[in-house]
Length: 102
Image 1 (cartoon, rainbow, N blue to C red):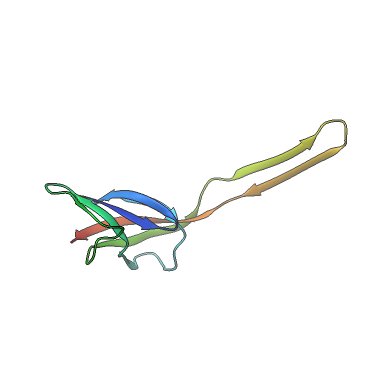
Image 2: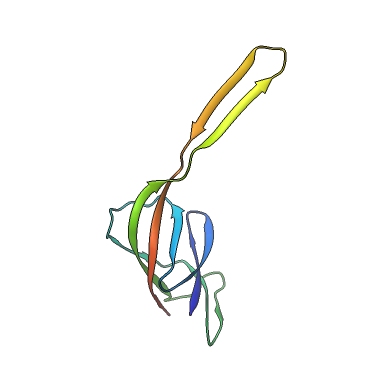
């Protein structure tokens, strides 16, 4: 059984036991989460919401709060003595999917 959930402005296809990296959510390691914005549930029978499925939930556990690898931003204009370096590390949450209920 799988589900398509919406969180942080993105949609994710998840199954029980999956570990996914999503936008940072509040909470500590080991906290339980409930995703109630379920767009679709599939498996033996396909159920599609319009736009959300009423009563469908995905339970998950926070595995860690971390950051993505560094992204380097470099601006350069030739012959103008202009160079700028910037770096950014986006904070993310790694979540393990538990139970999918309809």
